[in-house]
Amino acid sequence: MDNVSVTRSCNARKKVVVVGAGISGLCSASNLLAKGFDVVVLEARDRIGGRILTDHEDADNIDMGAAWMHGTSYNPLVKLISKLKIDYYYDDGNPLYFTEFGPAGPNFKAKNVADEFLDYIHYWIQKNPDGPDYSAEEHIRKFVGQHELITDDERIWAPEALRIVEPTLGLALGEISSRFLNDMLPPQRDLYVKGGYDRVVRHVAQPVRDLPGVLKLRHVVQNIEWNRSGGASPVAVHVCDPNWKPVVFDGDAVVVTVPLGVLHQNKIMFTPSIPKNIALGMSRTSYGALGKVFFEFTDVFWSKQNDNLVYFPTPATLDEDSEKNKYPVLSYSFMATNLWVMTGAKKLCVLLSPPVVYEIESMGGNADELFAYFEPLLELFRTEPYKSLPKMVEAKVTSWTKDEFAGNGTYSTAKVGDDPRILWDALEAEKDLRLQFAGEHCSRTGTGCVHGAYETGEVAADNISRILSRE
Image (tube, rainbow, N blue to C red; front, side):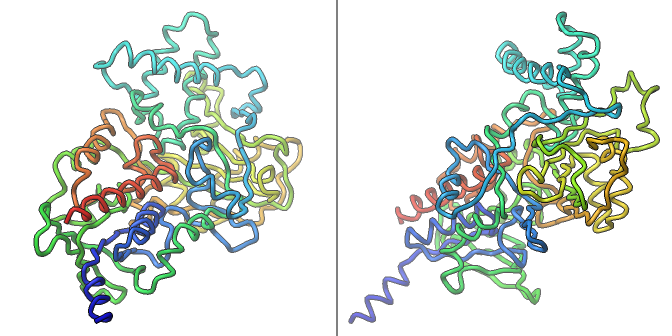
């Protein structure tokens, strides 16, 4: 009798299929397991973590993907810092600003004008709720053009100083929606996770990895059949297994956590199609790209006090004095994270945004080619400009724009004409579907952030639990 009861109990358990083993998928799966559901997690890669990827080739454990926690006053992942004994660093000290003519100096107020523009956007949207959506570049040029109190130099350089948001948004300034610029910026403050972000991933994944058969690596999802009303076959997920043989995983519900870029490319088919309001929302939210180059040298030749080194390109009106044509690297804005200050490593991490990220990531592991391209920029960072650069030990570059499982990019963003609110509202309106979506693109308050992805995994698990508990 006891064996019969156990069998019936197991048969009565609802099953949920989770697509993707990034932070949102792992969070959703762990929560569903805790609620008593049977869960299977299907991951296309041969590893977990998604766009969180820690390189363990040397003792520094550099993060090729996500490296920061944002919104630390309320970020739910912050509680893991003490629990997991994670070392960290707030890298929001005063940066050093550079132009191709050298250090910008302490009175470089063009950056202050750019910050003023970000405040102005809030005011402008309130006054023009139905106004046109300008690109951030066009809008700041209008702003400085009508600003009566700034100097001519500030008027020229402020648009270049605003380029500091390009890596954060994963877009060039001329593509960024000024209407949603502030919405897409991460909440403050910024906390650098030392020792590797994958420690957080492993912790969140522990319930998934502890149960045999839950995690299926190298399982590429091809098609998701789902039934709005449930019925005899609520969900069937068709995959190619590691041997590229077709396999079907049945379930009562499915949580899709793949990157927005993957959904944009229709890598996964849905039968029937995704609800129209969600599909519209996804089409009105863009996908950006952030890359990184890590340079290691035998000696530290840059500032040992400043958290970040920021380079602004020369405005077009000063092209006659510029060497941008001679050295293409000087045509773009860059932020270099000072890993010497953060971790004690003799390394700089140069952040890459479009369009240059595509060119640099295409160089792959060619360290000499990377150094040759960036040498004019690195020379500007010298504290003793009369000295030659020390010997480079190595250079490593990311490959997100070439990664099909990352959607050939890194996170959602807003181009001119986008409206990410459509997606966020649609997900709320469709919260009773047995087809749920999670990931950073689904977060209204943590777009592009790890904690945003994590929280949407919790929401999806709660929605599924509520839906299936009614049956």
